[in-house]
Length: 331
Image (cartoon, rainbow, N blue to C red):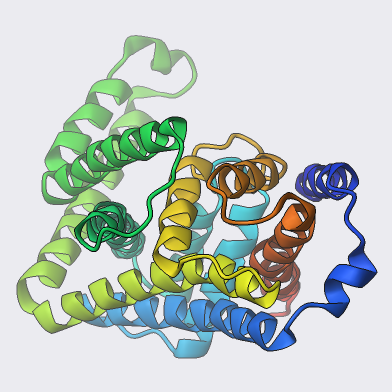
């Protein structure tokens, strides 16, 4: 379904922009495309390195090859589920399967998510500020400026909530106990099973809290490294559209490309379709064209190249890794 939405959106873009693919690809500088592909692969590698660093910070070990496998499987399930919702649960499951406790696994993935969100928020605040300070051209339409401001507010609220539950997990425990205490639940489960479930959740939340405390209290060097990885991952993601534009011969300003790409990713996180398919292609095309960063005739080819590198390659590689992960024989 996700692929169908994506193919339909790209096909419509190519049709309405009357793109001549043979002519467009003959004019592409493939060195820029190769550089963009290298960034995609490095993104997988850094994601695995970040997982290893977080797990090391809480006192466990994870082989790099296993971390890379978990990163790719998470990427695949993010690409086929609405709101990228499949990534974190699958990564928690695979970490637990590898021997990391459920509480620690949840802590690892939550810390990864929070650091990624903070890095994205820092860029959302930093790039526009830098553009203003350097008096660079800032030609975003009012609607996109509004979208940027809304995205920043949402990310501040989400980040605050995540950090709150990370350091005050007992609040989450109280909420769960309240929910499990509802009388109508006894129609489906016995009170003994509900109490056992509550005790199990409490144990995992305490393990989670201890893991977070260990991470933030005793491994500050690792925490800085995790923050650096998170920031670098986002910079590389935002740089892919710039390389593709330059490869098509469009010399748009780097900082403005980064800013527009960031606005897109702030909004795309809330797309309800699997892997944001269809919505991403249309939104990506609209925001870059509205920002005067690419000529209309090249718009369809630009979106095709971007989606192939950032979505289809990850979908194919992640799909193969997922297949062998869940169907391979245990040794």
